Image 1 (cartoon, rainbow, N blue to C red):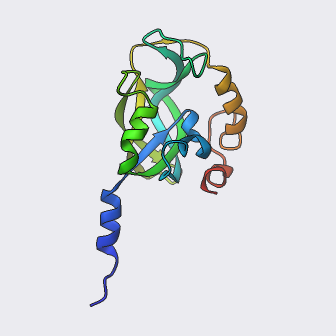
Image 2: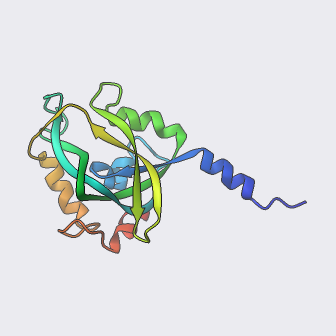
Length: 166
């Protein structure tokens, strides 16, 4: 009897997770540094959250030399980002990249809406105990690169999928 492939797909789904990125991990080149399984899934909107930049625990990042991205709950606001589909084998490297073990970020579960209006549950990260500060120079550079994905109002553009899927 031929296998319909349904069991294989379920197995793949169980071996993967969705990650909502809103900062430097918007870029394929950045996410792939430590997480080679990341595949562009979609552009999505996180409702009732706001993007901010800060220093976790009052410590200035030696890598970023300024504020790094985080999100916080803020009724009526929204954050646009990219959803990556990743193999569970990359979960520990993603946590390490986000500084979970050192307490800089904590993983959170968020519900985001795709451009088509579908709601999906994703892993994301939120900075702990931080002070708001201006974004680092690297984020200002990233903003220029990210402009291919998002308009000045933060709304995604059609090029977002092209930018991250190639």
